[in-house]
Length: 444
Ligand code: PLP
Image 1: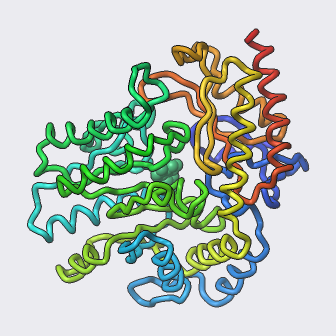
Image 2: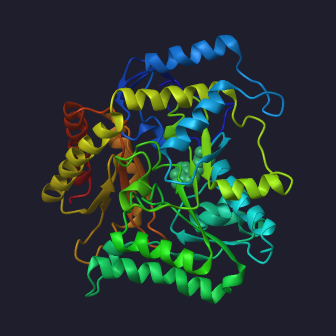
């Protein structure tokens, strides 16, 4: 195997083969080996790899100008993408701020809420309550929201930790409540937290509408979403939806908030927006908030590459491709197929304890006991072993060993939204082969 150049470093020393090219849901390394991109990278490549129409549209922009600083020029790709996105947002969220990634989007949302509150004479409001587990990004500001040992560990003294509430992992609860009652129970934890912090100090609540890597595609009971919105309204707390992973069609609607008819005050997006063709993120906010900031002298925020015409031309081309080929509709249909195939795995493997998700953001969790949902022993390293077994067989999946302070191995299966039913069959065949080997290796 060709290893990565030694000058380059990321999280670990794990060598990976050199990527040669991509085609639809497939990636090929330099030896010619084919991989199914069963996690769309990190839930990014929503429309698949090397889409020729997107590349051609980017090339048109590339030949004109790849950069023009936004304080010097406006550009058609950024204006057109902002207009298109505004049309896809819930009513009222029609002002768009571009960034280059998810962490930047989350921090932009926080700063926007804070500066707006200050313009309204509410200087006392600064705390942003988040859920645990959650993932909101790796920069220090986003890390304060992400929290937890796994990501924040050694960095904790470097940021002001924000208050947290438990994410609604109702599948772990063993009580006599109905799912809807559990949804209310978890939502009410936000009210308790706001009261405990002092309502006049709380600026916002941020949540992933469907959890990503942190909780493994966690979907809350319907009652949760509605009650959270009500509590935020009651206390004048901004509701920020982190749709960095769920946005751009991943859950079978353009935004996950549409599933519950919720209008957040601010939405952060990235990943599927540029879909791997260019680094791109966006924040959508209410017009009255943006106008208040502009009236008060401007939004004190910005990034050099924000709104660059090349990324925006990619984003625009990706959205057009999604519309032209009903890619979100395909996601909703294929999501149901994939979910039922994953549920089928529970009959074959007693160590698969839970299957969950929405659209093509799906996951399963391994346990040693389905009744108690006790995890597999840590030493088994299931989360990395299964990923490697699948990788060897040409299937890329995504995993984590955490479910918020509690151990638990979950695996995300999130192929590009263009996946077909036969391709889901290919994914399941490799996954089953890898699971058979995993079971044999551990006598499960
Ligand atoms: N928010 C969510 C929900 C995410 O899943 C991620 C990344 O995985 C981020 C924020 C951070 O995005 P980025 O890695 O692009 O900074």
